Structures are given as structure tokens and as C-alpha cells.
Length: 463
Image (tube, rainbow, N blue to C red; front, side, top):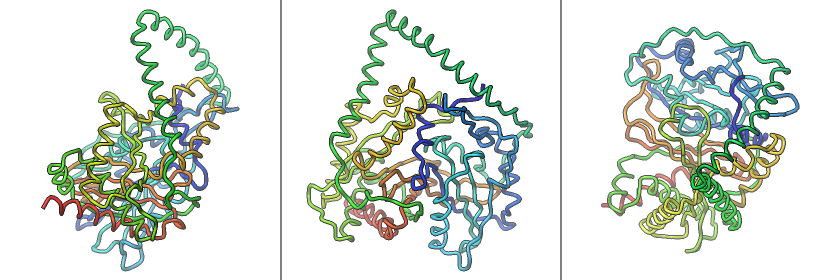
């Protein structure tokens, strides 16, 4: 039987609505070689590399009656030209025009009848540059493995590496009867799994008890977070279907210098930078900011182990961090963030996605879909925005001979979330992508500028 989506992966499908498209993406800017990179060359490159990510030629197949989670099956009519598309900016090809195009592309949901990804070659940028804009559904991949998948078209040298010939032939799609039979077979196996777990628990009560405590701890953490409502901010409003996109550029060495001088981690410096940016942005909106003002960020953390890093799918936990936007001192903001993050790590008080999945793992998918929708409705109460930080390679990469200059992530919006902050480090730079609701965040570029200014304020304390 084909691979079945996990409870966590399928939750991203259930949570998706016209205003909350659940795809992650990226915007990479390239400098083409003298001979250029045309659409046909890019398609040929992807065709030769796509064998490394078989999921990119698979689509979802729902089980009749939703008796079980959907499965991944080979797309017998896979068409590379549908997924790899071409666009161009009108002259002069400014960054503003690129951001406008990205906002429009990311607004549209992916077609669930096809493999859940799209890639756009955008030509006509100033300076002879080009961009590649990607969209991949969150059910397929999380932020960490998204970087790994993206590298299949990238090389460490201008000359593309040799790849073996692609001998892929799509497997026959299962019939409705086979899908139902597979679901019934999976359910039939579960009682045995439960008995095996019980026997293992009798043989090793300590190990079983530890697992139960771990799950209970994650659930209690979720309950505690829900009990303390997130602050009221303009970041949490009803949102529409259309998006804006903002960009900010910073240097990785600046974060390292601040960390070396004041302690903590590079991620602590990132969160302190975001806190300072949000403070400045709120003041530009004439919002009331007191010394006690905070903005709660959900900070996803990958919990994929070393032997799982090559696998597709989602293995994430999340910390809730109250960013001290009311603190006027940049250094004190950093110290407060570092203290909060260290306390989270020492207590193990992460909101464990796995712990929540354990509650719904044996529930029928219909019940799980309702639970996922309810959870999505609570996001306004739990946190104000999402901040993701994914490290990338610290050397130059190339696609079809074109050098990648910058890369900006695109993180999906949840219900009532006006903006998400995604960042990735690459070749000495740290690049922020701000995915925002078009109506609620008309000033997303102001927030992007505040990020650069906030880091500069921290760097000044080192000098």
C-alpha cells in the first residue's frame, strides 16, 4: 500500500481554507552566467534531479468516506511544465515589483489533484538577475527538510553535478476498493499494536511510564499556554486571501558578534532583533507600548533526529516566547529573551506537536479534521505571530550555472495572523521573508526596515 499521511501532516490539509493557504515557499535571487538560464534549461535540470525527491511526482488520494488519512500515490499524468512556470517583470524589474509578484503567487492555493508544489522562473530583474519562487504544501515538508529538498537543483559549483539517468515509471494508482481495503487493514493492525504496547509496558513499566509522562508534559504545556491568552495586538485580525511580501537583509557575523558579547545563542539574538523591530513598528502605528508590553511568538523547533533527517514529513515542536517589545533597552531585550528560551529548554515545556498527535492518533480522521480546525481557531488566543529560523549553507550555491545571491523564506499565515516572520542564513547573510495579509499589513515594508534597524541597534552596543 502507498504511504499514508500522518495525523500531523494531514492536519495541514484540514486547516487550509481560502484565507489560510498551507504552503511554504521561498524566493531566491540569482545572477545568471553570461549565456543566461532559460526556461527549457531549468525544466531539464529539474527533470534530471526530481528523482531525488519522489514525493514531487506524487499526489494525494483520499480514501472513500474518509475512513482513513489519504495516501501518496504516483501521478501517472505528471507534467513538469505545469509545475515549472515562467514569468517576467516589466522594466525596470525592481525589488518592489518582485515583492508584488511574490505576494500574488503565494495567495493562490495549490491544486490538490496534482503534486503539491509549483516553481516559477522570474526573469527581468534589475542588473540582469533572475529569481526562482517556490511553493510546497506544508503536508509534504517542514522548514528544515524544505532546505534539503531545495538543494536538489542546487550545486556547490557553477558546473552542474552528474546525476544518474532517471528510470522512473509511475506505479498504478490504487482503486477506490483498494484504498478502502488498505484503510481496513491498517485499522485491523492497531489492536495488535495496542496489545504489544501493553505487554512492553508490563515488561518495562519504567520506560512506558516515561513515555506517558513525556506526552502528558506536552499536553499540559499546551493547556497552560491556552490558559494565558496572548496579548492584544494589531497582528491579530481577520485576514483575507491576498498577500503582501516583505524582505530584510542582515549579516550573520553581526548576530555572532552580539552573541559573543552578550551571551545566549544566535537564535536568541534573532528573537531579540524581531522584538526590537516589532516595538519600533508598533510605535510607527501610534500603538500604546508600555514597559510591560509583550508580543507572543510561536517559535517552531525541529525535533527530527539525525537518522530521520533524510525523511519527508513533519517532526516539530514549538516554544511560546513573550517578546519584550515594551523594553526600550536592546541589551535588556536580548537578556530577557535568552532567559525565557533557556527556561523553556531546561523545563522541556515545548508545545509538543507529537504529544497532541498522540491524542488523536487512534481517532477517525473525521474527528481529527474537526480538532485541527478548532486548533486553528485558537491561534489568536495562543500566540500573536510565528517566527521561524532555518540555517542554510555558508557557501555559494548555483542552479544551472547561476549563482544564488539571496534566499527569502515564505511561511504561511494561520487564522487571524496578519504576518509571519521567516528567516534563513546563507553564505554569510541572514534573509528575512515577511508573508503578510494584504489589507492588514499595508506597511509590511516598514516592519522589514525595522528589522534591519533593530539589529543595527544591537550591534551598536557591541562597539
